[in-house]
Length: 311
Image 1: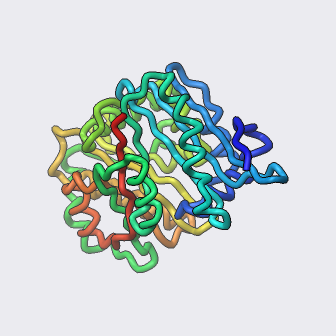
Image 2: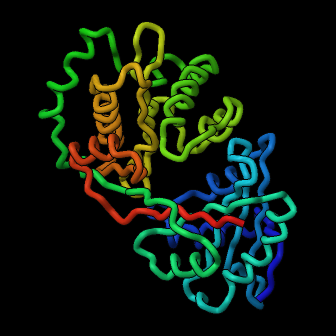
C-alpha cells in the first residue's frame, strides 16, 4: 500500500465507486468532481488516496474547512474498499492527513457514520471521536401517499395572502436567487447546532451550481413580494426517488401550516417527475420537523451519527 495526494481526474472514478458503496443515494462523477474542485474564498481542502501494488485506489481520505464553519473546525471523511478493510488502511490515511489540519490550526474535527454500521462507529471512537447527536433519515412512499386529509389544513393560506410557487415561476435570475438565499440563510440558523451559514456567493456556487439544482424544484411561500418559506427538492432519477433537502419558514409565519403546504408541493413535483419515494434527513434536536414528518407518514430509516473529535 502507498499513500499519495489525489489526482482528481484519474482517481475520482474509483473514489466514486467507494463512496457509492456507502451512500444510500448514488452520487455522480460530475457532482463529486465539482464539489471537490469548487473554488471559494476561505475554503481549505486536501485529499489523499491509498493505492495497491497496481496503483489502484483502495482508500480515500479528505479533510476540509468551509469559510462558514466555526473557526478551527474541520470535517474529515475516510472510506476504504470493503474488500480490503481491517488492514490498517483507514488509520494510515487519518495519520497522513493529521499534519494538514494541524498546520491549519484545527481545534476540532467533525465526521459522521451511518447508524447501521457499528464497525465504522467503533473505528471512529477508537480514533477519538464521540457521538454529538443523531440525524434521522426517513422515507415516504409517494405512490401510497394521499394528500387529501392534509388539504383542509392548508386551505386558509390563500385567504391570508400566502401563495406557493417555484423559483421557475419568477425566472432564475440573480435577484430571485438572492431572495431564496435570504430565506435559506435565516431558517438555516434555526437548525440545531448551526451557528453560521454560507454567503450568497458561496450559495450560488455550492447550491445553484450543483448538478441537482433545478429552479422548478425550489418551492417558496410568498407574502406580497417577500419569500417567507422554502422547500428544496432534489431528484434522484437513477432510483426513481427524490430528496427533500431543506424546509424552513420564517419565525413570524410559523404555526400557519406553511411548512406542511410546502412539503405537499414538493411531493407533487417529485411524483410528477417520476419519483416513487422521497427521503429527508432531520436532526434529533429538531422535534418540530420530526413531528411534521411523522404526521405525513414518513417511515424512519437508519440515520447518521454526527461525530466530533476535540483536538
